Length: 340
Image 1 (cartoon, helix red, strand yellow):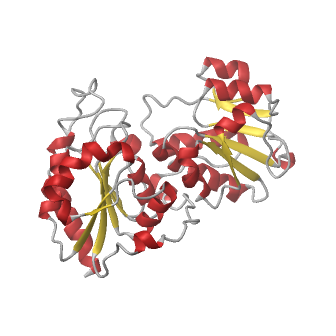
Image 2 (cartoon, rainbow, N blue to C red):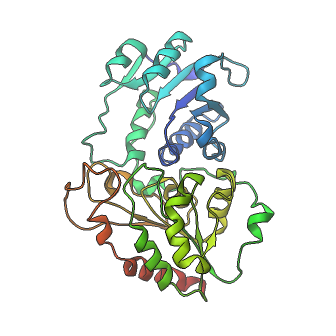
Image 3 (tube, one colour):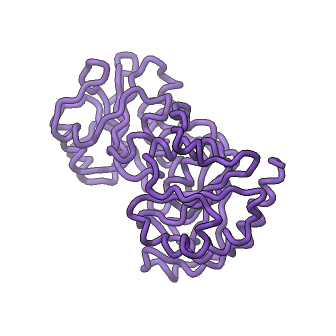
């Protein structure tokens, strides 16, 4: 079915998974808004990712996935006219059909899309050499606009310009005239993690006359990070479970850098054009070719080998832990030179 762009007044982008995935989908909204400025763009996600979605100036309406499943949804007073299933989800696809959304765009390789979608894009992520953000943009094809963007071009497409002011309780923690770096050791189980002892060693190496070190995490991370705080707690500013996601984004925005494995904060920092240092395993498809942070100041660290020995283990990676604290320390020292 051909999409009649000239009559389309709104569209829903559906991506209801984790923070990093949502960040890497924001360029999709930006390109749609650039091509069709009058189009009302809704972005469907979870309450957990709402702050990310609402920070994007290209998004007009946040749609809670739970509301979509149970209520009648409107965008600027009108019923949804188009939905793009950036993340295939069977329940959402059937609900979109039930709501009789006229245009329903999905990948052709999902059998449930054959029964629920009106427009298809041939897209397989599993063995693709492209980055996740580039794969997302392929779903722009039915709109007749360009979708083959380089990572360099995507750097400027996140549109995360609606960042709230930093709350006073966090402002009071900032030390002036220091390079402010956030260390985010955990990933909520979403990926491989750099060894906690490596983070401890890194903290011990950094010059506290130059660096203010924040350690961040969620309430679920407290117990896992406690050994780090027991060892080097006096050298860091502990902001674990101290703020909301919106406030954490504000902290990232006023800091200079962030170090983490392949998890949401490394993508937030990169999108906000901060020095984002990502530590990655060489395991396909979770290697940096697919998931590196995208930003003018982003970089990643991975050992130069093709290895899947740790693939069955969902938490640790021997190759990843071969990246030494000294490597990260030297990178931070080199970056911080411009600040002193």
